[in-house]
Length: 303
Length: 319
Image (cartoon, rainbow over all chains, first blue to last red; front, side):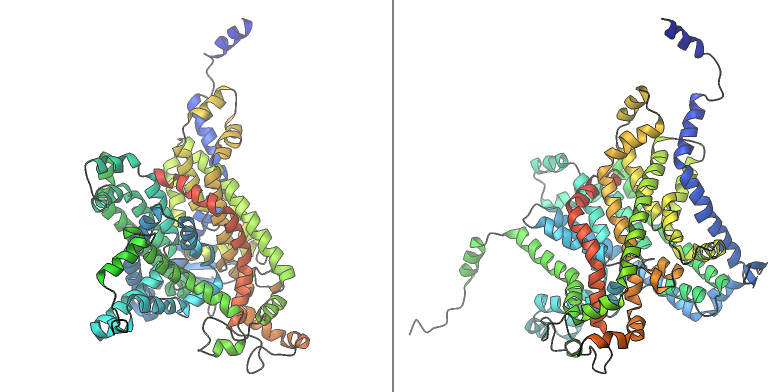
């Protein structure tokens, strides 16, 4: 009885630590390590890098700098043909790979999502590039065009020589160009396939059952149920494909930036400016992806 | 006369074979497509494994494609002898394990804060998390390199491990994101019950929220382990001494390593690897890579099933 009274007596006392403040405090307690990390490992380097890209380093021992305005940006965008070429190639590559990777990984995921024997084995195989593909030698192999050799063999299966002669040279060439493109694309599909699989598993089966009762075909169900339900995954995958291309060893632009900064003349300022231009392009691309995808995603939520 | 006549298979024959086969219709099509694509996926690995067992003469011989004429372990001998495994293997293991541990502990902890509490600026902070995923490391690597060099930690593993304990490091933001998605998806009631029973926020996290996130943790462990093990961009910038290098770096510098210790390596064995007496050829790099891929392969084989389940159950589906 006495205890109960105590609690009641304590309640009206106004403390600085009201519930809201306590909640805020707990939140900050949890993200405290991140705040420290963000300040030291993200915000500060970003600030320094931006500052550097607008200035010249006078002294390389303590990195005193002198404001130089837009000089490096101007040099990169007007004078440097190597940089401009890699930038345009990069833009072209991304516009090519992002849709193709999405289509192919969705196709593979839909196939893997069906119940058939050996499904676990196939899943393990399709995830293999993620486990091993990011290593040094694998990227070397890809640069040597080993993946293209694989496609040659596949081409012989799909398109025997007799058929190829019958189709004529031009069509055959077009097909082999297409197949070569696929081989480089398939290798980027590891994580997107897994993300799509997760998405497909999340589509409630009651929707399909209802559609089947209404005599919908598999084809209709794919376009009217599966595809609208996994648009969030599509958005995620597109962003992932763009981000994934940074770590790609075939990204010549990033190699150029690295070469400028860490070998030869140590042109930190110029490299920083080049990296920032690249980053602006990436953010612009992601913004476009979001804007294009947004109406489709909202539609699903409204339904 | 009738018997010698060549009988062309008719449509009915094909139908009969098709009816007998256990796989039909869409499934058959799917199997063919999947096997073809799996072949494209597996080809570079097969190429790598086979070349690692080839002798130099077989590698330069274009007619020897699949089965090596002279099956040899010489590439492995050379690679293993020159990779300084007594240093690089423990180095790689320590960095990978510590960095992964850092990622799992810090990212789950931070993500819990983002998922469960709303506090001033929490939206802005989470936007910065997303931005850190989108930011290529090349943009900020120069100031970071300069900072590390002023603190005198270049050449140590601190730049590789410590950021992981603060939710950064190699793709740290992605793990924060994954954990947050998971914590947002689970019902609050369990944690509320715990807090009514007098469980503080920290204890609630460590005793209830984190143990329930097992599948997400598996996903993060596998991805973090593999990415750290394979990474050679940042280690390549910070570690320049051979004895402190990690495995992928050593594989990348096999050529210079082998050339520097050629006489030593030639002493033991009679035959030389290359035609012109050099030991280094692409087979050796393949052997070194195969060797360095054994640990992640083992880890993946053990965690594969749980990993796939984890991906399916992780917060990704709830986006």
